[in-house]
Amino acid sequence: MGFLKKHTNKKFDYKPRYFKGEGNPFQIGHKFDEYRTTVGSNKGVKEKFKSAFEESENDKNKGFNKTILIIIAVLVFIFLYIIDFDLSIFKNPF
Image (cartoon, rainbow, N blue to C red; front, side, top):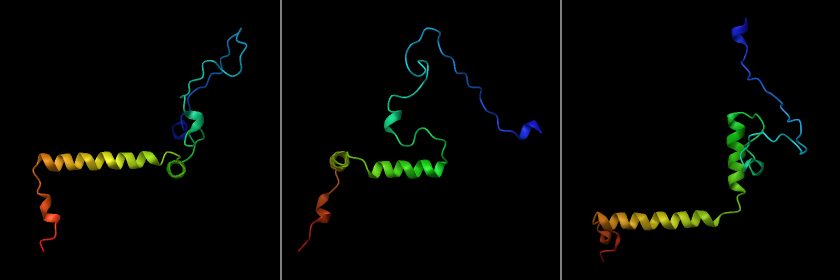
């Protein structure tokens, strides 16, 4: 019944003979992993989405959203100008 078992990759814990530092010098990790909450533990997909949503709610860079909205508005008005959209339909005729 070996075909029902989940395959796991082999893990090697190689440590160089003359290395005098802490940890493993060959460990592969992204440079921003220690700042993210969604990286690390084996959570389910639902928990990853929930933690990512909580992380985005607590983001300290709220001014960035305003900048994006201003850029989108400018691009929309440029597009409307290019297609010769008549903005007078929004004015009150009286």
